Image 1 (cartoon, chains in turn orange, brown):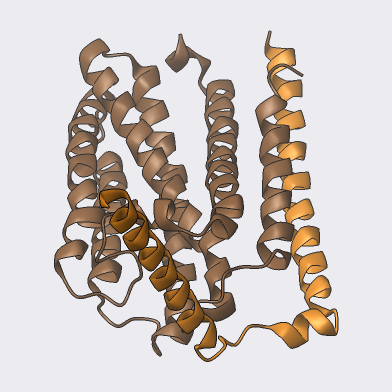
Image 2: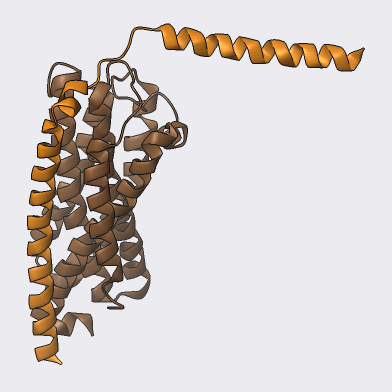
Amino acid sequence: MKKITFFLTLLMGLFMTLQVHAQQASAPPVEMAGVLHQNGKIYLVVLVLVTIFAGIIFQLIRIERKLNRLEQNNN
Amino acid sequence: MKRYWWKILCVLILLYVIIGGILLPVPAIPKLNESARNLFFHVPMWYVMIVCFLVSAIYALRFLLKSQTKDDLISREYVNVGIVFGCMGMITGMEWANIAWGAPWSNDPKQVSALYCLAIYFAYLILRYSVKDTDKQARLSAVYNVFAFALLVPLLFIIPAHFKSLHPGTDSKPFEALYTQASQFRKISLPAMIGWILLGVWIFNLRIRTLKLQKPELFS
Protein backbone atom coordinates (compact mmCIF):
# COMPACT_ATOMS: atom_id res chain seq x y z
CA MET A 1 0.00 0.00 0.00
CA LYS A 2 2.79 2.40 0.96
CA LYS A 3 4.56 1.70 -2.31
CA ILE A 4 1.46 2.45 -4.33
CA THR A 5 0.90 5.80 -2.61
CA PHE A 6 4.56 6.61 -3.15
CA PHE A 7 4.32 5.93 -6.87
CA LEU A 8 1.07 7.83 -7.10
CA THR A 9 2.58 10.93 -5.50
CA LEU A 10 5.61 10.56 -7.75
CA LEU A 11 3.37 10.41 -10.81
CA MET A 12 1.37 13.38 -9.61
CA GLY A 13 4.54 15.36 -9.04
CA LEU A 14 5.75 14.50 -12.51
CA PHE A 15 2.41 15.51 -14.00
CA MET A 16 2.49 18.83 -12.14
CA THR A 17 5.97 19.69 -13.39
CA LEU A 18 4.85 18.85 -16.91
CA GLN A 19 1.89 21.17 -16.47
CA VAL A 20 4.19 23.96 -15.32
CA HIS A 21 6.27 23.45 -18.43
CA ALA A 22 3.16 23.57 -20.59
CA GLN A 23 2.17 26.86 -18.96
CA GLN A 24 5.59 28.29 -19.62
CA ALA A 25 5.38 27.28 -23.24
CA SER A 26 2.07 29.06 -23.68
CA ALA A 27 3.47 32.36 -22.33
CA PRO A 28 3.80 35.09 -24.97
CA PRO A 29 6.96 34.55 -27.03
CA VAL A 30 9.96 36.69 -26.13
CA GLU A 31 11.02 38.82 -29.05
CA MET A 32 14.43 37.83 -30.38
CA ALA A 33 16.39 39.07 -33.38
CA GLY A 34 14.92 36.51 -35.77
CA VAL A 35 14.88 38.87 -38.76
CA LEU A 36 18.57 39.67 -38.37
CA HIS A 37 19.31 35.96 -38.52
CA GLN A 38 16.96 35.41 -41.45
CA ASN A 39 18.41 38.02 -43.77
CA GLY A 40 21.94 37.12 -42.75
CA LYS A 41 22.95 40.61 -41.63
CA ILE A 42 24.04 39.19 -38.28
CA TYR A 43 26.94 37.54 -40.12
CA LEU A 44 28.10 40.99 -41.20
CA VAL A 45 28.23 42.07 -37.55
CA VAL A 46 30.25 38.98 -36.67
CA LEU A 47 32.62 39.66 -39.58
CA VAL A 48 33.18 43.24 -38.38
CA LEU A 49 33.80 42.10 -34.80
CA VAL A 50 36.24 39.40 -35.89
CA THR A 51 38.08 41.91 -38.10
CA ILE A 52 38.47 44.38 -35.23
CA PHE A 53 39.56 41.60 -32.89
CA ALA A 54 42.10 40.40 -35.47
CA GLY A 55 43.47 43.95 -35.69
CA ILE A 56 43.86 44.23 -31.92
CA ILE A 57 45.56 40.82 -31.67
CA PHE A 58 47.82 41.73 -34.61
CA GLN A 59 49.02 44.76 -32.68
CA LEU A 60 49.53 42.76 -29.48
CA ILE A 61 51.61 40.21 -31.40
CA ARG A 62 53.70 42.99 -32.95
CA ILE A 63 54.48 44.42 -29.50
CA GLU A 64 55.22 40.90 -28.33
CA ARG A 65 57.76 40.32 -31.12
CA LYS A 66 59.37 43.69 -30.59
CA LEU A 67 59.80 42.91 -26.89
CA ASN A 68 61.24 39.50 -27.74
CA ARG A 69 63.81 41.11 -30.01
CA LEU A 70 64.78 43.64 -27.36
CA GLU A 71 65.02 40.95 -24.69
CA GLN A 72 67.29 38.87 -26.92
CA ASN A 73 69.52 41.88 -27.57
CA ASN A 74 69.79 42.55 -23.85
CA ASN A 75 70.90 39.05 -22.99
CA MET B 1 56.29 27.79 -28.15
CA LYS B 2 56.27 26.75 -24.50
CA ARG B 3 55.87 30.35 -23.39
CA TYR B 4 53.23 31.21 -25.97
CA TRP B 5 50.67 28.45 -25.65
CA TRP B 6 48.35 30.36 -23.32
CA LYS B 7 48.37 33.41 -25.58
CA ILE B 8 47.31 31.27 -28.54
CA LEU B 9 44.67 29.68 -26.30
CA CYS B 10 43.45 33.16 -25.36
CA VAL B 11 43.01 34.20 -29.02
CA LEU B 12 41.21 30.95 -29.90
CA ILE B 13 38.86 31.18 -26.91
CA LEU B 14 38.03 34.81 -27.61
CA LEU B 15 37.39 34.06 -31.29
CA TYR B 16 34.96 31.36 -30.19
CA VAL B 17 33.37 33.78 -27.71
CA ILE B 18 32.91 36.54 -30.30
CA ILE B 19 31.53 34.28 -33.02
CA GLY B 20 29.59 31.94 -30.73
CA GLY B 21 28.44 34.73 -28.47
CA ILE B 22 26.66 36.38 -31.39
CA LEU B 23 25.53 33.38 -33.43
CA LEU B 24 24.73 30.58 -30.95
CA PRO B 25 21.19 30.65 -29.60
CA VAL B 26 20.61 32.16 -26.14
CA PRO B 27 17.57 31.42 -23.95
CA ALA B 28 14.67 33.80 -24.61
CA ILE B 29 14.28 35.75 -21.36
CA PRO B 30 11.71 38.55 -21.17
CA LYS B 31 13.17 42.09 -21.04
CA LEU B 32 16.71 40.85 -21.66
CA ASN B 33 15.99 39.50 -25.16
CA GLU B 34 19.10 39.48 -27.33
CA SER B 35 20.95 41.81 -24.96
CA ALA B 36 21.59 38.74 -22.79
CA ARG B 37 24.57 38.23 -25.11
CA ASN B 38 26.29 41.05 -23.22
CA LEU B 39 26.87 38.41 -20.57
CA PHE B 40 29.84 37.27 -22.68
CA PHE B 41 31.33 40.74 -23.05
CA HIS B 42 30.24 43.14 -20.29
CA VAL B 43 30.40 40.77 -17.31
CA PRO B 44 33.89 39.33 -18.07
CA MET B 45 35.33 42.87 -17.93
CA TRP B 46 34.52 42.89 -14.22
CA TYR B 47 35.93 39.41 -13.76
CA VAL B 48 39.21 40.56 -15.31
CA MET B 49 39.23 43.61 -13.05
CA ILE B 50 38.60 41.57 -9.91
CA VAL B 51 41.28 39.02 -10.82
CA CYS B 52 43.80 41.80 -11.56
CA PHE B 53 43.09 43.54 -8.26
CA LEU B 54 43.26 40.25 -6.36
CA VAL B 55 46.65 39.35 -7.81
CA SER B 56 47.77 42.92 -7.19
CA ALA B 57 46.80 42.69 -3.52
CA ILE B 58 48.61 39.36 -3.19
CA TYR B 59 51.80 40.89 -4.60
CA ALA B 60 51.36 43.92 -2.33
CA LEU B 61 51.22 41.56 0.65
CA ARG B 62 54.27 39.73 -0.66
CA PHE B 63 56.08 43.04 -0.95
CA LEU B 64 55.26 43.88 2.66
CA LEU B 65 56.63 40.52 3.75
CA LYS B 66 59.74 40.31 1.55
CA SER B 67 60.47 43.93 0.56
CA GLN B 68 61.39 43.16 -3.03
CA THR B 69 60.85 46.07 -5.45
CA LYS B 70 59.82 43.59 -8.13
CA ASP B 71 56.65 42.64 -6.24
CA ASP B 72 55.66 46.28 -5.87
CA LEU B 73 56.01 46.86 -9.61
CA ILE B 74 53.98 43.75 -10.45
CA SER B 75 51.32 44.92 -8.00
CA ARG B 76 51.20 48.36 -9.65
CA GLU B 77 50.99 47.00 -13.20
CA TYR B 78 48.11 44.71 -12.25
CA VAL B 79 46.22 47.73 -10.92
CA ASN B 80 46.91 49.58 -14.18
CA VAL B 81 45.48 46.72 -16.25
CA GLY B 82 42.56 46.19 -13.85
CA ILE B 83 41.52 49.84 -13.98
CA VAL B 84 41.32 49.81 -17.78
CA PHE B 85 39.14 46.70 -17.73
CA GLY B 86 37.03 48.19 -14.92
CA CYS B 87 36.46 51.33 -16.99
CA MET B 88 35.42 49.19 -19.94
CA GLY B 89 33.00 47.33 -17.66
CA MET B 90 31.64 50.68 -16.49
CA ILE B 91 31.22 52.11 -19.99
CA THR B 92 29.64 48.94 -21.41
CA GLY B 93 27.38 48.82 -18.36
CA MET B 94 26.23 52.39 -18.98
CA GLU B 95 25.63 51.65 -22.65
CA TRP B 96 23.54 48.66 -21.66
CA ALA B 97 21.70 50.58 -18.95
CA ASN B 98 20.83 53.31 -21.47
CA ILE B 99 18.79 50.76 -23.41
CA ALA B 100 17.61 48.47 -20.60
CA TRP B 101 16.90 50.98 -17.81
CA GLY B 102 16.28 54.08 -19.94
CA ALA B 103 19.26 56.12 -18.75
CA PRO B 104 23.03 55.56 -18.68
CA TRP B 105 23.18 56.52 -15.01
CA SER B 106 20.37 55.95 -12.55
CA ASN B 107 22.27 55.86 -9.23
CA ASP B 108 21.63 52.15 -9.02
CA PRO B 109 23.41 50.60 -5.98
CA LYS B 110 25.44 48.34 -8.25
CA GLN B 111 26.50 51.29 -10.42
CA VAL B 112 27.40 53.48 -7.47
CA SER B 113 29.40 50.80 -5.69
CA ALA B 114 31.26 49.93 -8.90
CA LEU B 115 32.11 53.61 -9.28
CA TYR B 116 33.37 53.77 -5.68
CA CYS B 117 35.51 50.73 -6.35
CA LEU B 118 37.07 52.36 -9.43
CA ALA B 119 37.56 55.62 -7.51
CA ILE B 120 39.43 53.76 -4.74
CA TYR B 121 41.88 52.38 -7.28
CA PHE B 122 42.29 55.72 -9.03
CA ALA B 123 43.16 57.08 -5.60
CA TYR B 124 45.76 54.31 -5.33
CA LEU B 125 47.52 55.63 -8.44
CA ILE B 126 47.27 59.22 -7.20
CA LEU B 127 48.75 58.15 -3.86
CA ARG B 128 51.61 56.44 -5.69
CA TYR B 129 52.55 59.43 -7.78
CA SER B 130 52.20 61.92 -4.93
CA VAL B 131 54.90 60.24 -2.84
CA LYS B 132 58.33 60.99 -4.26
CA ASP B 133 60.47 58.74 -2.10
CA THR B 134 60.55 55.33 -3.85
CA ASP B 135 60.77 53.20 -0.75
CA LYS B 136 58.04 55.07 1.09
CA GLN B 137 55.90 55.06 -2.05
CA ALA B 138 56.12 51.30 -2.42
CA ARG B 139 55.39 50.63 1.26
CA LEU B 140 52.48 53.08 1.52
CA SER B 141 50.81 51.93 -1.66
CA ALA B 142 51.20 48.27 -0.73
CA VAL B 143 49.35 48.85 2.54
CA TYR B 144 46.70 50.91 0.75
CA ASN B 145 46.36 48.22 -1.90
CA VAL B 146 45.60 45.48 0.62
CA PHE B 147 42.95 47.64 2.28
CA ALA B 148 41.52 48.60 -1.11
CA PHE B 149 40.98 44.97 -2.00
CA ALA B 150 39.46 44.28 1.39
CA LEU B 151 36.95 47.05 0.58
CA LEU B 152 36.30 45.80 -2.95
CA VAL B 153 34.61 42.58 -1.86
CA PRO B 154 31.85 44.18 0.27
CA LEU B 155 31.48 47.03 -2.25
CA LEU B 156 30.86 44.80 -5.24
CA PHE B 157 29.09 41.83 -3.69
CA ILE B 158 27.72 42.47 -0.23
CA ILE B 159 26.47 46.08 -0.12
CA PRO B 160 24.53 46.03 -3.44
CA ALA B 161 22.82 42.82 -2.32
CA HIS B 162 21.11 44.74 0.50
CA PHE B 163 19.51 47.32 -1.76
CA LYS B 164 16.84 47.13 -4.40
CA SER B 165 18.68 47.10 -7.68
CA LEU B 166 17.78 47.00 -11.35
CA HIS B 167 20.95 45.06 -12.04
CA PRO B 168 20.33 41.34 -12.60
CA GLY B 169 22.16 39.05 -10.19
CA THR B 170 22.40 41.70 -7.46
CA ASP B 171 19.57 40.48 -5.25
CA SER B 172 20.81 36.91 -5.28
CA LYS B 173 24.12 35.57 -4.09
CA PRO B 174 27.08 36.96 -6.08
CA PHE B 175 28.07 33.93 -8.12
CA GLU B 176 24.65 32.33 -8.24
CA ALA B 177 24.07 33.78 -11.70
CA LEU B 178 26.93 31.71 -13.03
CA TYR B 179 25.62 28.47 -11.55
CA THR B 180 21.97 28.92 -12.34
CA GLN B 181 22.52 30.04 -15.91
CA ALA B 182 21.02 27.79 -18.51
CA SER B 183 23.61 25.47 -20.02
CA GLN B 184 23.23 27.45 -23.26
CA PHE B 185 24.72 30.44 -21.48
CA ARG B 186 27.44 28.56 -19.69
CA LYS B 187 28.73 27.08 -22.96
CA ILE B 188 29.95 30.55 -23.83
CA SER B 189 30.08 32.50 -20.56
CA LEU B 190 32.61 30.15 -18.94
CA PRO B 191 35.10 30.25 -21.87
CA ALA B 192 34.43 34.00 -22.08
CA MET B 193 35.52 34.47 -18.48
CA ILE B 194 38.71 32.47 -19.02
CA GLY B 195 39.49 34.08 -22.40
CA TRP B 196 39.13 37.67 -21.22
CA ILE B 197 41.14 36.99 -18.05
CA LEU B 198 43.92 35.53 -20.22
CA LEU B 199 43.83 38.68 -22.38
CA GLY B 200 44.23 40.81 -19.25
CA VAL B 201 47.19 38.73 -18.10
CA TRP B 202 48.71 39.00 -21.59
CA ILE B 203 48.52 42.80 -21.50
CA PHE B 204 50.04 42.75 -18.01
CA ASN B 205 52.79 40.49 -19.34
CA LEU B 206 53.66 43.02 -22.08
CA ARG B 207 53.67 45.90 -19.59
CA ILE B 208 55.91 44.22 -17.03
CA ARG B 209 58.37 43.07 -19.71
CA THR B 210 58.63 46.61 -21.06
CA LEU B 211 59.34 47.82 -17.55
CA LYS B 212 61.97 45.13 -17.12
CA LEU B 213 63.73 46.32 -20.27
CA GLN B 214 63.57 49.93 -19.13
CA LYS B 215 64.80 49.36 -15.58
CA PRO B 216 66.43 45.94 -15.30
CA GLU B 217 68.10 46.91 -12.01
CA LEU B 218 64.72 46.98 -10.23
CA PHE B 219 64.06 43.36 -11.06
CA SER B 220 67.29 41.82 -9.84
